[in-house]
Amino acid sequence: MRFIVNPFTGDLVPYTNFAAKPINTNFDYSTQSPYLLHTTKGNSRILKIIVDIDTAFNGSGWSFSIGDSNNNQSLFAPFEIDLSEIEKFEVNPGYLYTISTQIYLYLNAGNATTGSGFIYLQEA
Image (cartoon, rainbow, N blue to C red):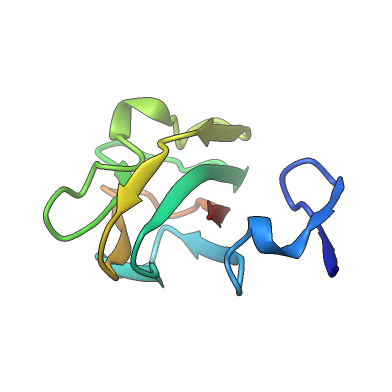
């Protein structure tokens, strides 16, 4: 059996608990939206998303969400994050995609001139 390090906890876990290619994506205030993060497999569940803001967004008018083309907030809604805070924000949507689906970051940077972070996505 193969094992990998869980990027969320640091624990060693069986490889089958994660997507074949775990998502680790950086973004900043200049990222074009919508930005394709990942394409799910059919019958897969998005278990966890962590957004780690490493440089706070300045200015105002920004918004952030993660979802698909039918619902841009299905996995991570704007009220679940504050881009002006250097912090990790975590959601556990448990959303099941029965068919292969593209997952997007929807980012409106408003009038920000700084700000960046990383997105970690766990699919099972």
